[in-house]
Length: 361
View 1 (cartoon, rainbow, N blue to C red):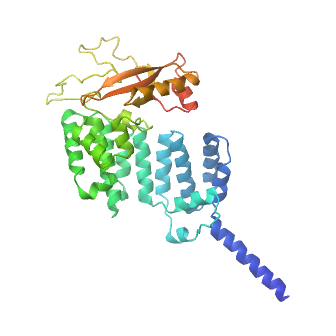
View 2 (view 1 turned 90 degrees about the vertical axis):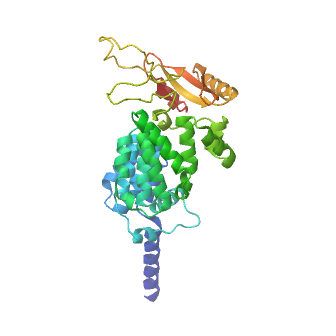
View 3 (view 1 turned 90 degrees about the horizontal axis):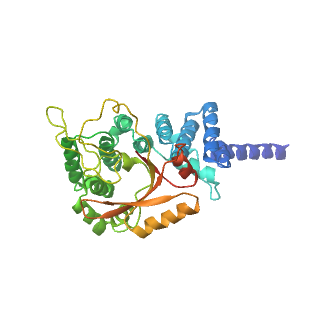
């Protein structure tokens, strides 16, 4: 009888330990990883979220779903799900209840890492993906939440940087643009902004062709991805955010004076989003919707890198060409583009083939 009781006790201990080590979010995440496509995984996880009652498990599933949506460039959905995850409270007891074993499976590692993510970090994830979708106002609304109460210096630094990025997403008047540049230069020298200094310098270089920022990146952070882009050894990060950002010179910076009229014509480049004519558009043309003319697939500082991408595209059946753009700084960049097709789905075809691309109107 004693042996039977011992066995029952041992089984109960083992069973409780399994629950203790597993967490209810592990099983659905493990199954989601087995699907052939990201879309199938996302669809499955959404159904699991509806069935989940625990705030802790639901938060993990929302955050994981958002991470998959971000990988699939579904930035709007990702932003919303990161925000939902951030809004669900997790206790310290929930976090401590999950212990990662030595031979942990991938799903268990994912759960462990997501459990450690604070609400503030998840809000920043929501902001980042909102920015990638070009939704500056949505990003600002997330930044105006309880995250501002964070005492973490690195989080506060990101809040300041993301606020600048959010302001750059929309139409920017000349005086506001100059204020942003001034603010970024101040941030670049603040000790409390050290954790995001590389991003600040890169932003200055990108929007303002800032020679000093370029030199600082090259000299102080020579191995950073940002420095490699400035030098021309790498192309710009594969997210659409930088293509929404206003830029001095090649972007359309809206210079407006006190009477509300344009005080200066925006400068044009050979890869500008829209052609700007000095004369007013005719009445019959004023409501014509702009159409996508081509897809930008890459931006390089070296022509041979652009040519290599053209060859890769050719292997996949795409006809690509190289255009050049000379910046005010004197640097010349090479842009790889593919013309839009009659069906208007060239962007989808490129992404399906594994190429990031952004529309040029």
